[in-house]
Length: 453
Image (cartoon, rainbow, N blue to C red):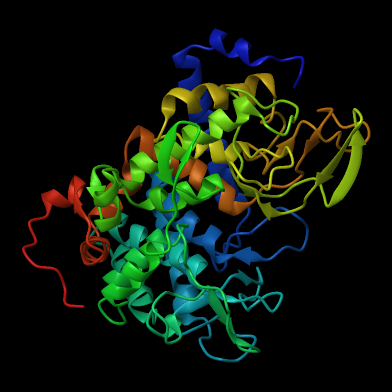
């Protein structure tokens, strides 16, 4: 990376960047075609051998198939068939307290065996990963609107799956929602508190017509927020960049405010824009002195890393981590960057994201010889394995949870496709209104009253 200075980016013009984005989107989309079990629709969590499926990656796939149709990556009939297979699997799969079920109370286990679809690794029944799965189902239900038997069944199953989720049960008697549950130990001790990717979870939970969260749960969640000032920006703090992205993959929050954001004169979209600039400014400042960081080389988030290990490099002892929730500005930061997280910020700050993506492709060569766009992460400070082509560490894996936001945020920037689909979903609108949101595209829907608490 040291031989390719960021200034080289200024030679890349807009038409080249557009072509780069189109190619990145198409290649990334291929993950959901090839890393899938066509018999049940499950999507591989990670490209390592004998790895299980991820329900979050599967939900992202359901949202990506419409993009594939619109961009000519797959036919509508093939997308409908894959979507229907997936929804049928989740509807028919075993729901119950047994330790080898697929789900319980309308939620699903985080990881599932790719072949059997049963719980893998004694993992938790995950409320947030189930949220992404259900959001994908609802998006599919809005896209496949044709008067055919297959597309009608997609719509029916998408609603049935969403209606089955028991959000109140997931509160476990508290105000906020728990992270999950296991049959061995009951509810996890952690709750969705503090600003995080659970914005989408609370919106879907509040919008449920069958087992809705009370309005008080959203108020309790926002009461745990931290408003901070960093690198010249006032913003709602969350360290990892993905937190500022994942709910926005689905919902267009531009100009829309809840009580918290009204009190700050901001909105969640503007907040994500500020957070994106904070991440870039942090990389320019580079307080820990890592290699490669700069104006076009940034993006710190929850990701895989080269550790755990400690190496002495250029006289400095460096501690490298494995998979951790890296964040800005407080860390942890071990020099590991995630190019997918840069691409997922495209709608918020295209003026700094586009050059950064071009840097990752043309200078750092991070897409070269990869089947599905960018690998999960890279670390220019860590030397990597002996004889590797880069001269620094690059993750050997792709993750489905990283691939989906790249496809979808490139599309949201181009056409707003997923934002439009979710905008047309009455459950999303009701959830936003019950959370107290006003303005933005909600103005288009003249609903004089919101559902009762």
